[in-house]
Length: 130
Image (cartoon, rainbow, N blue to C red; front, top):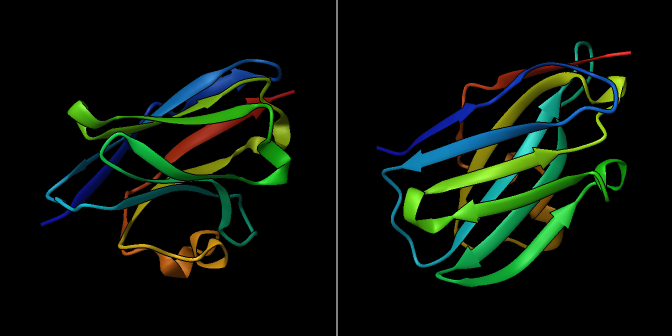
């Protein structure tokens, strides 16, 4: 059974940094896609960043325009963990952040859509104060 577990959220002042972690278990594939999404109160879930890879080869890294230059996705294959480093946080980054896994390759359009992901974590709250 695939499990996706996020951690690392919290409260931070504007301009600060946080690192989120996403550990995946029960999934053994030759091709992986992991994405980070977020959902603020009253808003739809939106794509933040995603990565696709196989072994040590990264095929795609996609970032939402709103986080380019501030957020970085990385992975540790040995730990089955994906990280989201968030720097220069802004109050508008406040949301519940979700990690998701997709089974098999996806087009760029699909990788940006929450509907394309098969497994989701429970979410972790990130609050940025002004």
